Length: 345
Image (tube, rainbow, N blue to C red; front, side):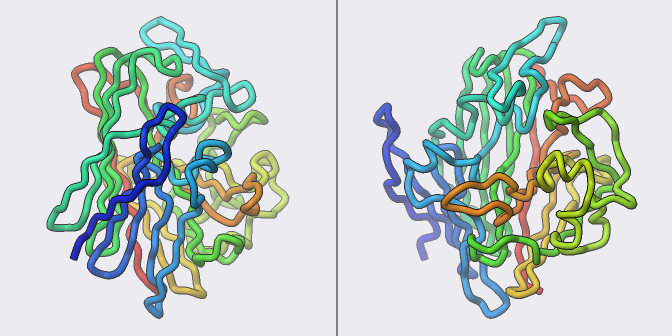
């Protein structure tokens, strides 16, 4: 059986072709990824009856990804999430980035890694089919220092796991913070809100934000707050509680301080959809995870019809000395891994 399919998806304004690659596994799962932005457009996962549905929100044509996509399914960087005022200092030099989120820099700027056409190499491995995506971001792109070579590996395993592995190297000291930005709805119905999804997050603390959605620097305990997902609960139970932080985000749009970071790669979250039985476990090597409940989705989608579990370093890390460092040096290699493991309950 052929496990990787390749199809024309469209052309960019510069004439470059965008290719859609479809990975298949032995259990019927399908994963479609674009060369543009490394975007996951489809992720077909079986329910408890074996029925396959697409659980990743996305568009059916390139034009919509080019004009109005809220980072659907994309590789996000060079720096995922927000940097306050679009400025940071490295080795006593201040760098200025694009401010594309009010007064802040968001998700790599005006043309981040989500808006470039990657070089793609399909591979077949014993565990499943893979795509190796490569891109060289030139020195000064979006204001960042360094020529940075990025490599992202997507693998759809025969055990119904989506493995995402990131690498980066630089020739000049710089900062790197990468994430995969899929919007998940385990019901397989993108018009249904995710209130019935049950969520568990292994985090004793989260990062409260100010009115500009920048972390205040506090590590706040989740105990006795709506942010406590240490025990599994439905989104509906807590998302509309009267809480100042929820009001700021119009729902959840906050980074969790994940437990047991010293262990490295470990399970950090679990989502279950009781009606279909679909379950997704998240494993990562990273210290943080942004929970976003799609509070600002616009037509043709409706707000809160998906949730994002964006594993990453903490937002605004370059400006907050007590956060884990996101600096990458020329003699180092950035590495991180996040795996989404699917099963039925």
